Length: 470
Image (cartoon, rainbow, N blue to C red; front, side, top):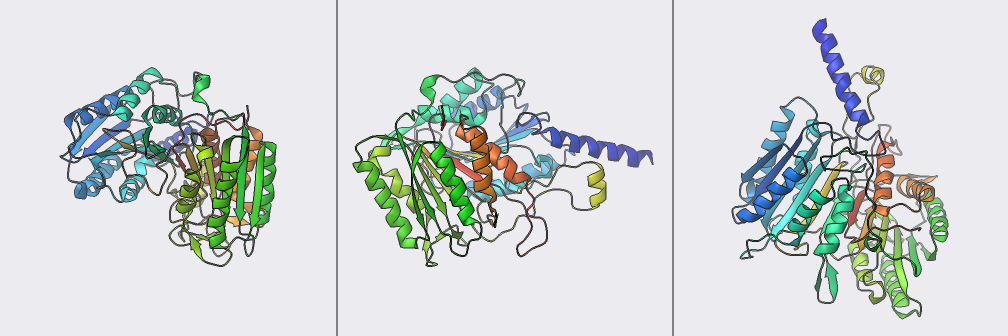
């Protein structure tokens, strides 16, 4: 009997920790142990590994492991690492994994991320992945990304990691063929993540005015929405249109575009921006449609168009060079319906303990794609989001369903609500809050009575803070 009581109390304490993880000001508590792992191929220089160890120590990671293996063995190494964490028998605070390999060798990093995301000890905890490319024959000295990250981690311990990375991206960006390239982050975090060895709920320093995009000039928005056979889509269009008007965007709306019209409308939008007399300081593009099995957008004619191709179209806009370009994608990215991670047996027992709701399987992950020696993302980046000043927000994780009903979609409706409440906030932080609220929703139907979960995916190569209202 005593064993049963002590076990119940231990489980209750763990659940209480999980509940408090995001309970105060939407920030991860980081109460448990922090573990870091550097997994590198033999070609990676010792100086790169050394500076990574320095970064880990600056961020307060007590346990810093280093393993060397061929890229083909990375998955096996991560499986062993996950089993090691689960064997601890207690929840973790955070894990940081650096995967370092020559350019082009980490072709499917999502498999590596997925392996660690299934770790029970890390459920509800932030999981950070540094995916670093290393060019063969490159100088052994670490590049501006790692040196800048090391410096800022020590100098600005109270900054959230997203804020810190944005500043590093500003320092790291490089010019090539008339375009600006920089590292990219991909986030499904549900709260602010402060890795410095400080009280995570203490006051944060205000960034300098120069670290924010200047949005004093005109703003332009384009909304391409398939309404036909998509109940609730009109509600999304109306809600987003009202928000854009409030935020000062001059909005163009096109409904039920074909796949070809998606491309043509983007090209015309770019041409209008390049030829207008008054300068533009920001552009927003909303794409709403059914999605294909591989993340394609389906036009009103049922034909496919790749969203990355549309992003690439606008990235060539001369009028928007150095300006933020925001893409909102409300569409399915596959057919998987995520049941989430959480207790399923003895539901009355978990209700009695007031257990937190199930967490989406893809939540609480932050990936950073960068070049260990140089400046740009070095080919690791999925899609075409390796150009600077681009923010893409997907309504669903890769391969998953995006949910919508007659009242509109979870993503667009929550986004509008959060931005109307705090329009002056940093957009990356506001989107993290949008994701937190979407992750807490339990979705049922229309073709399934079981609980399902959703999670946003945020990709950013922004180099400054983006605040849509002063």
